[in-house]
Length: 431
Image (cartoon, rainbow, N blue to C red; front, side, top):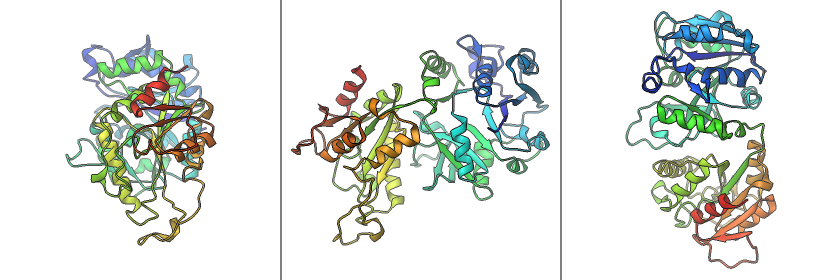
């Protein structure tokens, strides 16, 4: 385990000050304990032994409370900012002390991430800078990350975005793992921000990857978010979502379940979600289930659209869901089709694969990636192949009446429901 972390705790916290006047932002309590103490306790338990803490405004409160860290079994070194240096500038001050990979954690953000998983991803990718990323319910005011198929970051859209931007709901969640050589790319004695100033420039200089995970992380920058964070701590969601714990998932087919099935959607303009989809998926987001889309997309094998266009179609879906405060935790698609004879078909995708439903390959891949307990999970689909994939994977199944729900089949689902909304209600009300 990489045992050094830098906690950025020098911000003024002007929004949260209205609810906690005179309290340093990292000292704002969550269930009676400063958020900074939660951070140190959570990650020292996973092997972080040394914490550099940047302090500025009201920094004495932090120093007086934590001192040298001995009471928490860690070593704390303070970095005092004589002038505000932004989220990145303070790291340049201690460049000579960062000789091995280190974590960067924001001092106003509560999280519980399985560091071993993120570290393995970082090493497997030979990454120099790994950014924890996830979808959220407010991507319109977040820094958005664009990745290639390997999760290497190829673009960063800092907030505020241009009005016509359509991008996948993949948000920079402000939790990083850096190799020490990236620090030389941070300007000295100048205020700079990772998301706004540095990451867009680093794309072509260093290898940056997005570690996409549904684990809990949320800043408490205002009173509303503070209440949400405290609730997640008190109801156990914060710890439950750590991927060292078994997860529960609701797997969802795309066409005919989330969106109108117009047969082989090949352009973003053809993507239109049902009126009830946003509310249904938002209910999943607020529950202890992950929302994971499992979809066959033979439009790729048929040559009707390429994978870049399919990404745009999914970005359109993400945008429509986001406008209703909902998000998909992850999406898996199969680009293959075993049959030949289509005019524009792409030969390399004309194969018999293990990922095309009714085979369960994508469900099993998701189970491995996110440590999902299939016995506690569900598949919602409109076609017999969705139901068969779920049965083969060992999850409970629900067939909806929308899309191809009226096709007769001997493959029987565990339950039937009118639509995605009814199916989600059934799951969440079940024991």
